Image (cartoon, rainbow over all chains, first blue to last red; front, top):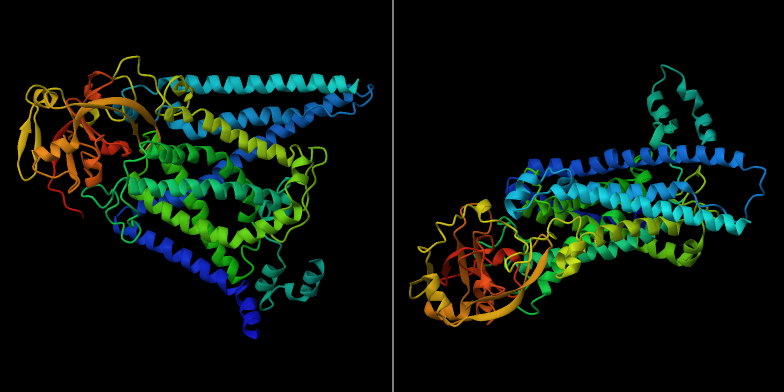
Length: 170
Length: 448
């Protein structure tokens, strides 16, 4: 029992924690040796580490900054709206937040672009046309159409919710 | 904290020995994301991360298992089939790939590809929910944390690597400097190792969190009533929360809605009939026309160097076995022909059922002097470039009466892009094993 507590003090977690992780590194290490053996390791390593950098230090900061900018601008318009409407009694039901009606279609559209950009931006065109015998041309149009539908549906929903909130407040 | 730093004040005097270490100890870390007050979303916390983690646990497990199944479907023991020849212990033998049910590969590979696409928003939401941990300061407080954080590099790197390579590959966007097969295969093993250990370490806490707080209370909370979770030891809960602009159920619906959009716009490429047209953003849900040969082409004849002068009157099928024989297309058409509706299902996640007519592989085996069921076959194509110009089928696949050397599809001659003059079609085999433009069927196969 003394050994237990000394281990915990030195290592910071129970012994099984280290054993489980050692097993993980064993399997991952073996797979890495295979990657080295087949000779693809430089590209593999660059893409593996690049994947982390791409998500954590590019994609996440970009969408967070976009969200921050959108929140700041909608917060401003809401404040302005509130001062204009001050004489009216505050409705008991909160009007829907504009930010989410902007956030959701933007995020969905951005997600589709992120995943399907080789087709939408036509980077895959040479391979795609050779293999499939069709052009990637329609994908940009389709993505724009889907984006428009998403924004239109979100706007419609926003108007409906505002109307409902307004009626409930009266 | 202020007390602790005051206690060390005398050490901050310049010129004194050890002042750097003391200053580092008293330092609260670099600014910006390394400070806890930088992270202000009131939604982050163990409950949200636990719920997203559980959804991913189910989803990733499904995608990982169907991925391993796809490896087994390639019959990697048969000559020329394994795209990862240096696999070592990792490509262990699972089972002989069955010919029944005929839709099995269609479903498992559909789940693998469409499931992976559907999980993208959930993965992004999960990574969002834990991102403050990436910047936590100090980077580690114990040896255990150092080791665990190293495994998290494999986990996050592995996850994003697997999703990115898979997503680029189904769009034929080969920008990576390696062959897709070994990279996605070994990447999967690295990711799965880190994934399993992450689940083992975190699952007790997930269960504890959800037992303590339940699902209903947080799911019922509106935006106006959304408050941060109680402070947690991991520092996911913000110390300086901003007002909520979205409820927790709103965030889950947001991520789930993203999944629905991904799913809804791509699942059509696994479905026949009018619903196929719903695959607006998927590489292989395209409409070719109303004719008998108007269905998905994965690789055109031109892209693989097959020309019509090779497939004309001079084309012969060679059977290699105890007896060696040659047949023209007219010879084959004069043999007993059989017609079956069978799916063709690609590793890239699309599938379609078509009606094929041709000679049984079992009959051809007999003509080559081989008892069907005793040996497999290696089919060789006219194709000059690209993968899968050669593919091997097992003895059981050859013996199945529905396994054909197809000459016609939907009542018409095969088009050149669909493999004219003759192609293999085997129930439940992955698409690439249905060799097109067959020039030789070699029944002298030995297992590797």
